[in-house]
Amino acid sequence: MNQRKMRIGMSIRGHGYHPAAWRHPDVPADGTLQVEHYVRSAQTAERGKLDMIFFADGAGIRQGDNPPGSLARTGRDMIELEPTMLLPALAMVTTSIGLVTTASTTYNEPYNIARRFATLDLISKSAGWNVVASWSEHEAQNFGLETTLDYDTRYARSAEFVDVVKGLWDGWEDGALLLDKAGGRYFDEAKMHVLNHHGRFFKVRGPLSVACMPQGHPVIVQAGASEQGRELGAATADVIYAIHGALDAAQAYYADVKGRMAKYGREPDDLKIMPAFCPVLGRTRADAQAKFDEFQELVDPLAGLASLYAAFGDLSGYPLDGPVPDDAIGTLGMRSGSAQLRERMRQEKPTIRELYLRTGVTGSARIGTPSDIADAMQEWFENGACDGFNITPAHLPGGCEDFVELVVPELRRRGLFRAEYEGKTLRKISGSNVRRAATLPRAWIGSWTPPNKPARKRRPTR
Image 1 (cartoon, rainbow, N blue to C red):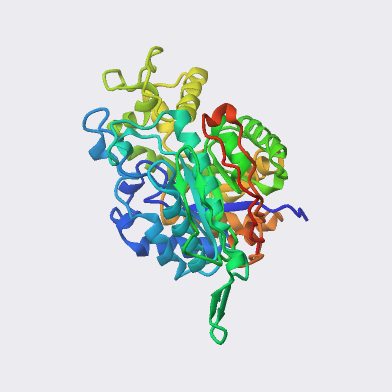
Image 2 (tube, rainbow, N blue to C red):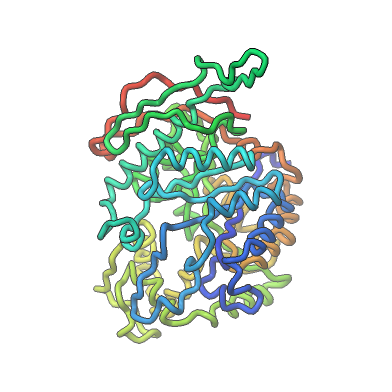
């Protein structure tokens, strides 16, 4: 039997990852405001023994009304619960599955984030932080800015931010809390450390007012295909959430990022690369295709054009069934995603309608039977493209339930996925180890120089 097992997360944000999911008759349009909507998917994912549930997030509504009238026709990522408030509620109705959400390094402060995720780790024993450097002007305008920070500054701030958060998490050693009522000593002073960080972006004294996290550190998740994102992931991440549409691109990314890790004193298996994967399932291939076609028919053309705006600008003046203009240039608000989209256009030469329909789901979409889906996952897993997948179901809760009920048993039959959890924390489940982060290259970190400070005493992995 294959001893190496897939790591699988389930993204349960919103209505699902098809842009028209909210219009589907099986999806509650108001579900994103109901805790029960998320409870159902979280418990389903745990029933399947998946590693984690995952919430992408942004600090505001990131879509503009481009082209005009499109915003009101977009349901995905619009109105939803704040995930760091939601996850503690989900911790009360699950026992083992990891709870991972995004928190921006652009519009937060390290102390608040360190405290928030340390608290979630104590509540759940399985917290994870998806580190994101926010890119949207719409987010910036919610925080007193007219535009976002430039690309290099965002990543420099993010690198220092992560370093400070980890330093705060290391502020209390194991055994620091004595809780000695008879002797009158609450904690051991020698095991409490003041961080005293002074950097380019942050000045943070510490120590953190939360201690004794079950995992030592919450698991660090990152995303990003840029040079900066790859380097930061290789140096600091436990998991990378990647987005690739083709096997060869995923293989190249996997080899590149894993190849960067040695210079940071890390082993390749210390980092799990889990690309987005969107399965649309049916008992037969015809059933699966019919299900996908139903979603596609629900895509409003204006909403479809909005999904292309960042890469190509306003295409509303062109025939939907005509070609994408060669000179169409968008804002490129997300560099790596827009570059992939433009490359697809150059290679495949789709019509505008074909392009927005093909790009409607996040990551690598597969349509088929449970065996078809398992075949695709196995091919990537066994051919150097990933360590597992972050499932981005087309709709919720049904897409999560389909995957757990139909695909997970097939993966187990092939010896590719666990039958039971290996531990009670996300680190034990995923096999991640806490390691001291190395200094990041100054070539892209800008003028931030990590302050000289003694090596921190890392809490052991539990």
